[in-house]
Length: 113
Ligand SMILES: [Zn+2]
Image (cartoon, rainbow, N blue to C red):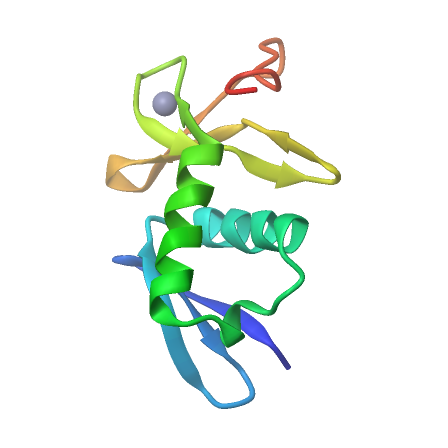
C-alpha cells in the first residue's frame, strides 16, 4: 500500500496502490521516479499523494535541479541515484535500450556534488 511506480517504454509515473490512481509527472525512467521519491522523503515529511498538482510540479522541478548531472562519458543530461544513504552516479538509460554505465575503476560518486 502506498506510492508505487509504473514503468514502460514511454517512461515511468507514480500511482497510489490504495486508490489505483496515477498522478504526477512522466519521469524519464523508473530510476528517475525512484530518485524523486527518495529525494522527496529526504526533504519533506508529507506524502507525495497529498500534494496539489502545482506543489508536486514545483517539487519535481526542484528535485531535477538538485539531482541534475551531466554524464561524463557521453554528455547526456541525467540524474543522480540514491544508493543507501548517498546520492551517486552510476550510469543512465541510453537510446536503444542500452545502459551507459560507469566502469568500476571510475569514481563518479562525486559528480554533481
Ligand atoms: Zn552517458
